[in-house]
Each structure stands twice: as structure tokens, then as C-alpha cells.
Image 1 (cartoon, rainbow, N blue to C red):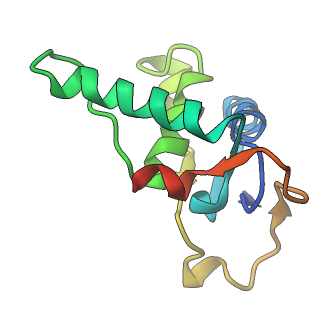
Image 2 (image 1 turned 135 degrees about the horizontal axis):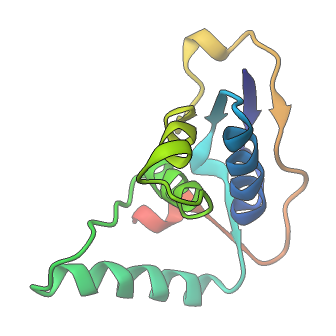
Length: 130
């Protein structure tokens, strides 16, 4: 089992790493999902996210897009797993657990550090839910 601390990690890079490890058969636990960073222009990121949510809310049928940080991360990882609805992809997705904070059972365990220092242009996932 790999326990990864997502603090200051870049969302896309972290998601691709986790997807690959889960497809290999590794159990993954991702902590501090609300502190993962999305790089780029803050205004553009927020506008695209809200536009995606508005399409669903305007009477059209479609997927529900959550504002909860760990669900945003889980959805990003899911997008990087091929055939996530059947077979190997479905099993890989079941091996991934995401948490917004650190549960008591993982506080004392050894963690892999996912991120480094802060970048100049970034948006934390926690800011999307506002």
C-alpha cells in the first residue's frame, strides 16, 4: 500500500502517477486532497469549472460534477484510467482511496511526498468549492 501526501502536488501529474500505480495492482491512499494545486490562470480555471457545472444544471441531462475536493481529484484520476467502467480499470479505481484530510489510521504511517514548493500561478482545489 502506498500512502501519498498531496500537499502542494500538481493535480495532473499526481493523477497520472496514481492511475499507473493502480493499474499495476498497487493499493493507493491519497491524503490532503484539498491542498492539491491546479496550475494555470486562476480566473480561467474557475470559469471553466463553473461552465461545466452550469451545463449540467441548465436542464440538460449529464454527469453531476461535485465541488468536494476529494471527489474532484478522484474524477481526474478516473479520467486517466482506461476502461474505468469495466474489467481492469474498474478494479484499479476500487484500489484508490482519497481523503481531504489525514485520517487517524494514517497519521503515524510513512507517506510519500507528492508535492514540492509552491508555484507562482496556481489554484488549490479547496478554492473551487467556494
